[in-house]
Amino acid sequence: MTLTTTDWRKSAVYQIYPKSFYSPEGKPTGTLRGVTAKLDYLAELGVDYLWLTPVYASPQRDNGYDVSDYYAIDPSYGTMTDFDQLIAEAGKRQLSVMMDIVVNHCSTDHEWFRQGRNPDSPYHDYFIWRDEPTDWVSKFGGPAWSFDEVAGKYYLHLFDKTQADLNWENPALREAVYQMMGFWRDKGVRGFRLDVINLISKDDSFADDPTGDGRKHYTDGPRVHDYLQEMNQRVFAGHDLMTVGEMSSTTLDHCLRYSNLNEQELKMTFNFHHLKVDYPNGEKWTAAPFDFLELKRILSDWQVGMQGNAWNAIFWCNHDQPRVVSRFGDDTVYRIESAKMLATTLHGLQGTPYIYQGEEIGTPNPDFTDLTDYRDVETLNAYTEKASLGETEADILAAIRQKSRDNARTPMQWDASPHAGFSTATPWIPVPENHTSINVEAALADPDSVFYHYKQLIHLRKQYDVLTNGSYRLLTPDDLSLWAYERTTDDEQVLVLSNFYGTAASFTLPDEWLDHQVLIQNYPDVLEASGQVTLRPYESLMLYQTT
Image (spheres, rainbow, N blue to C red):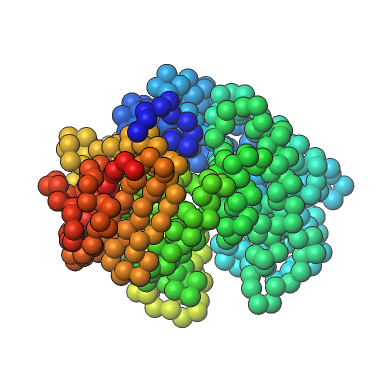
């Protein structure tokens, strides 16, 4: 064991959804000053980087992922002075700020698009136009092409119709993007999360896809690695920056190139295959249990496949995903135990862990019962589409309660007061009723809370090199309840045992593991782990030994 200065591989990232984080000014939405006000809390947790979802000027059709001005702070969040103050105050606490870079598309309110509607404007080629649309489908539902009356052509939008895809074939567009990223880098930003970055290169044949939705023509496209290598050289090279790419429907082979350890493109990647194990037949908007064996298989395949060649970003939650304690745990009787178990399972893997706001206190889904509680454009589009197909109200709402992105977007639960201490104003989206018992104030007052479990895991990752460098081996591929895996170096070993269900499960400890120490467990009484181990509901253990 060695305790060394933290490097990016040992770091932990905390994702902040500013709109729902904190408003000290008493606004319906959170602000940059709200983030600054909570920096001591984040420093106490022990994270190293703070990833902010977009705070740029935006009409907020997609909660900031529809950028109308890359150089301006949206007034709802504050001012550029507020942003500069956040950077400065974070630095005083050894916290680094990461910006969300959205450059697959921009808002149709952006000046580029406003001018680009004119076919004679140099900005016209900043976007992708066709005289006739293809059969591609938007990821938010409906066609991926919309007709513009001024241009007299169809423009591509893989997401909402107000999010026009940018034309990365145009060198002038790429130069504008790199200059913009350099602006934020030079202001003191120390990391970039790149939104759906593997979609920026489209097959210029723009062929129809009668057996699919078009994604095979733009996912991990023909020139995407060239563009990321160019971005690396123009923006990242020579600077100490954390970079992570969000990868939509990607493959392991491509991620081995995106996040290769030679750092020619990005430091790490997000992939989402493990978060589709509750999509029956690939259908998101259907309420269904998760496939536990598939969850283990996918994450294990990526652990082994990336080992020694590239780096993983590991996560359960983000602003687009339901709360993990509701998704893969038990958010009622065993909420605390399952939240800790899921944390231990994830933090024992190789990669940089990302913690989404509220995850560290075991926040569950809000379980809204009325469609009027939802704000997410994807959710509302899904409701309309499902209803048009004749599905029952009950079935649609059951799926939405389980799958909606708004599950993650409710206000951060700071205390038991009205509006959860988020603001004195009525928040933009309802506060879950459970905030009276599940909140930061209660978590900080309880030494056995989910918060302190996360804090301990973050510290262990900095303390034990095996959690950074150890190889991975899955021990229970076919077990229907247990996930057991080993991490091994020449000097150290870690064994993680996790019961994913509400009934006891047994595991026979290998003979070589009979002399060990327990690094962390999620029940207050330490289980004697020797021989035949019986794990209680949602119990997890992390064992350690030298080799």
